[in-house]
Length: 128
Image (tube, rainbow, N blue to C red):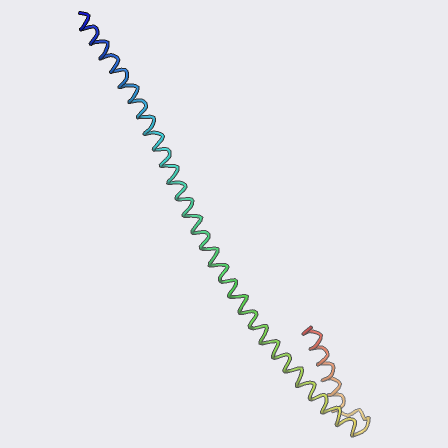
């Protein structure tokens, strides 16, 4: 009987140990599921962040291209203004030579020359 009791106690102890190990395994499985779920969410968040960064990069590239286009346009306009100023200066010099050789009369040409001079000054002010 003592062997039978001893065997039964051993079976009971093993059964208890099995339950403990089963509970521990369930706990590990649950924690693993939580960690996997957390990792999947983190991965999803990371992918969303990468997508957002790519969108920002695209927007920044577009803004940089726009800035370059604006700079090219500004440079072109600057050259046009400089050419116009130079043209007006040449015209003013030619008009001033004509008006100094023809006296000090208030003719249409001398009024036009004064208008040209004021236009040059105005263009220079707006340029600077």
